[in-house]
Length: 442
Image 1 (spheres, rainbow, N blue to C red):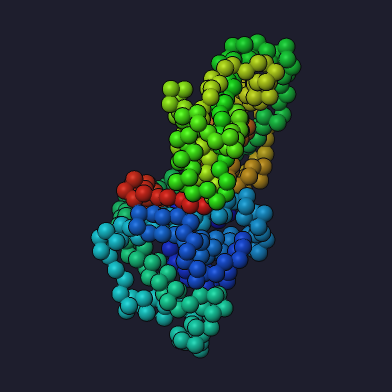
Image 2: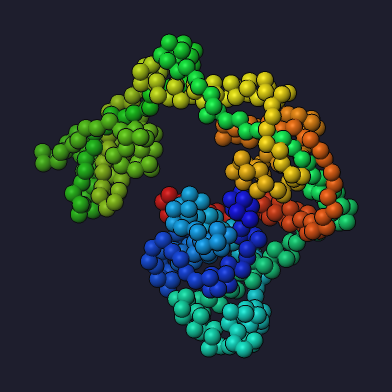
């Protein structure tokens, strides 16, 4: 389950559509204080639908509780950051909003009767085996949710379910039989993990310098811009700033207006990314930029000189060159080591494993093991190796092979086809509905 969640984060919104319900049942966890009633803070807009900070906090809390359950209570904020939980939560909300835009375009609706039926089916609102309005109100209150807000969210989730149900992918008997056969093939293998951490690379200047000489055009200085600018007083209006801009262009600045000289670039940026982009579009024949407002202050800028990109000296490029050289050499030498070892290596013997048995390969991280097994079951050779990335190659020797009698794969193909279809659906909707994100770092 952990492996699936790590590798298929992008499908969570499709497979876990009852997000509001899961939230109420598990309780709230957040990375900061926020009032759900505050609708002013939109973090994104998808088509005609806005995503609020409250939506993001709730989505984060739902994911946190899902992971915490998988990790048996041992999930914390550090793990949440390593999993990129905030980004996952925003991705879920954006995918939801894409589907809701589609629902609106086709005028799909959720009736009050459908809403009531759903709420009355949620057993954490039950008392003595039946729905209780008092329990309903109490549970929402404990989770800092109002009834109108909760019911609006449940309607959204029901509408998403309605869209996906209408687009449900069907499978046939032959497809299920084929997939069942593939997934029930089991191999007993010897395997050994080779890592580039085992490989030492000579990266002395004697070796690095000729390498740099042959590709120095790949290590260039950054384009920079010499500018002269005016930082207007904090209370300056745009109208006043424009007057100063005209005087600046005519070289008729009042004596009390001071200009500042600076050299700026994308990495050495006194302003913001948008302003640097505008500076890069200035020319020496048209060097003046109209006043731009940054954090409440106006700036008027003149381009003085463009410092073009040139090859870095060996010393300036050395750190980049060394990193690239070591990475390249390790990759080559690891491949050589695999080629020289595959015929004779002796490794760790597994029991019979299928593609679903990643956790049995204890020498690999579950993600790596899943990748290895997926590739292994496409191989024709009895002995060989699989490059699983991250500087690792797995040698394998298939000792035995057999068919298992496992009938629990009946819905796997439907899930697989649905995941592929839903990914295509989301990609299509992304091109149809514009997405704007207003929160930095996500």
